[in-house]
Image (cartoon, rainbow, N blue to C red; front, side):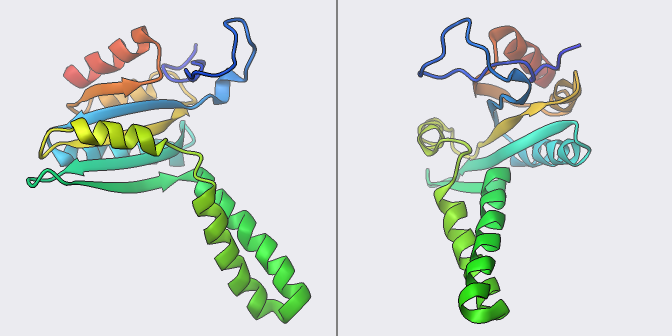
Length: 187
């Protein structure tokens, strides 16, 4: 039985013909949910992190955007698998170069610097333009939770959504899946 979020191709503007074959099992989906109560956003995020730890979902990126009483918004990137992977690769590369040039201490220090640089440059998660666009339209006092990932087991995301009250404002999911998740948020 397919999951609500797996087996959905990421919609995009480039290149794929309708019959193109892709590895849909690992195609990440974007869902943006707004909440009037920031604690609801935090609760949903924590529930999804727990599912990620149990390997029931694969959470790639999670970003909070909150618009304060002054109309200013704060962006808080909570989770990002690609960035940590890039930092780890950079650390290994830096350590190897450092060992060749200056020994283990310089290798580790160089690895940390190179890893941080590579991680910042390899942000393959949620597009900053999408975040900016939604932040501009966010109501004061509300929080938007951007979630990028996919479900590995049927129904787990819908069950999590059913525990919170929010509104889906953007997604790459098909309309029927979006509607089922919104009904869960409304219940």
